[in-house]
Length: 544
Ligand SMILES: [Zn+2]
Image 1: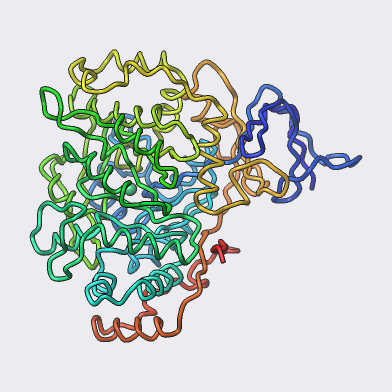
Image 2: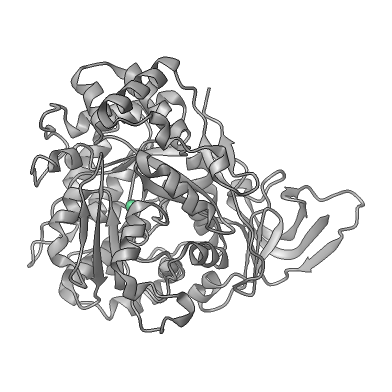
């Protein structure tokens, strides 16, 4: 079956293409214009914009903490169809089905769940397998777990850490590795309430810095395409930009990804001792070509914060709105769930909103700044269309700013920024760059051989509306969305790296789990057969 998408404005920066032209789909792939062959179907796309399917590198859509949030907030998660519009999170529709549907309708076709404890990987994969349309992946968390910290305490060296990381990635079928408040979460178990890059984890005697560097090196040496994904220490605290700056400096020349940098873009200036330090961070990111970041934009409204940073979530429990929270100090990272409402009238929330936009607008290279709200921590992912509009139209920004406290904006530089993202820059940030960052050459672009994940948008004055409801979306060549609504439900794959694992590490983990937990280490293995969908997993190559 050959389909011709005719006359769209093709925005495909990976192939240096921004022109009116055609796209050809044969089966699940984009193919070169066939010589002389007639298309079986021609779709008139004149007036529409064609981009590759969107890729979200950091969105909490599955796993134990997400489900604890669901259980804790039943009033916000009633069956989607019966939920009144005014209910908090009413636009999220937070079932696995709705997650897939809402992403697809915005033209997103690949999403990464970035924080899964190894012991919860099977559950997360089962939940992702139940999420339709999109392809997905997990990042597995290490760095506060007893085994990793024990290896470091006994100075076993880089090869032992590397073998353990490889074993963990393979066992949990992850696409990459994350570390959350490195060492801080382990220290929290000893009643430590504040933990920075050079603080030492009690009992293990290792610093946060040493943990980051050891895991960063291991990920790099294994050849995992996605660099270590770091949730830094001191999230949310005034003055914490210093921690992010120190972490960027600690990366030296190896690749490193810093997650939701907005939550680290805070200084202590101004009347409330809370200001945006986004300009300093943007300058550091601009200078560090080995570092990539995602923003974690905050938007106003009700949401729930979900994090494996138990220390941080415990500290934030007093800000819970509504007043309930859950802190689970489990093995390795546990989790903290704190509902929260960002308010336009709040000084702090206005500074957070501004700091995120400053990062977007002041980091020059769209290949190294990624589009996230840290869903649902900064805002539900359904807020993405409004954020695209804020980035692409300075008049839209000015309108939003007019509703915020002048004193709050005075401790930011946002009102002075005039940059407007182009469509091509948006396509880099949400398509081409994430595909490159994750090591997925089959997507993020519209060139020959790419997976036929295509979003067609209907441009108009209202940019948010254009991105909210794609005119057409194809997943693997199959039409799944028409005029902003899912018309065909199918299931995607889970993407995972398949590193080589040393037999000695397998034996060692078997002994460790047997002695420590009385369980076979296989209890956490994610088998192919656990996911009853066709083609459940797709291997992503490590660099050899
Ligand atoms: Zn996150």
